[in-house]
Image (cartoon, rainbow, N blue to C red; front, side):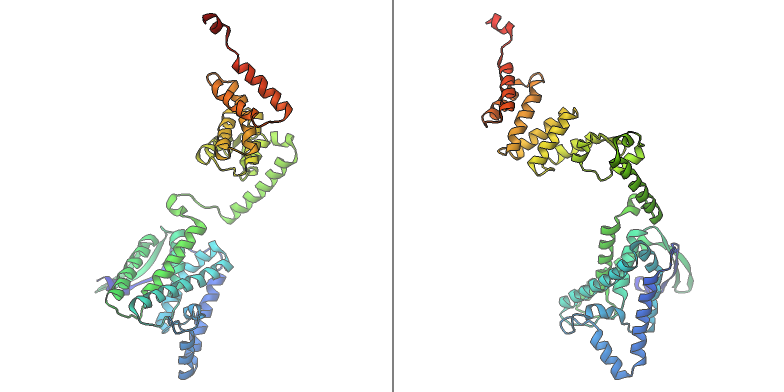
Length: 400
């Protein structure tokens, strides 16, 4: 019943119409039709020679047949079914990718499908020919699956004496097709059998489409995060440019900026630049939490010791002594013998000298700093701190 149902299940529409004319989809359909007509109109010997020259046969054909085979079809039914299904899903994917990137994606899907067929021929030890655009169309279906997993297709079905229409979500339809292709692909390899249907090329194209779509768009339909439309992205870019002009023009304008303007102007600001400008509120949360995550989860986030030391000094200037202490410890542990780490010992010793219960650690750090022969001004300040920390309280002298 499984292959019987597969054969008599024909898609005729979907519930996700495209919003603009799919130029690349229509042009690719025209190219496929033209290639098929060339094989039909030419005399039989020339047509066979053309098909043999453009069909991909692993180990025997030229390298360019990896792509040219995707524009050939074995018959009118093969051509019509492939291109009709491509028309159903191609426009929506092209709308999200753009015309040029969609064409490159289509060709990449065909190349991946040819490589999948080459793997199949290597497993069974027979150089079988491949032609048809189904591998590229499976790649487009994989991208459509990532972009619109819960949109529905409409099918005509005919099973025994029953027929009618049915609606199936993309998620279930793609799972159904993958299950069928995996079963047939395993059967072909297990029984060393050849087939007129390239199930391995289908799986190769589908894997390429899903991987590229996940890398380009992410799995937002599964996570519930709606992507921004083109108009919303354009409005956000204009608002961001205006906010940045305010942010980088004058400090008085920064004080009058709203929270939304500040978030748009500083959405890609580096932690060091934020520290320099004294920004500690961004995107609805305190920026210092971001610094704390950076310092605790990734101690070597600022690879250059000079940058780490500059961050420590700016945190001290803005009164973030706790974060400055963490940054100083990270610098000392990551680069213990650098001049920046020596300077960090002085800054850290000065901070610990003001805290109760940390005088012994402050003394150790300041003595290590003095042993490195620092500048005269810093040496005098460090010696003064050491003398103060080494003084014993009066009550201890009296007890002794």
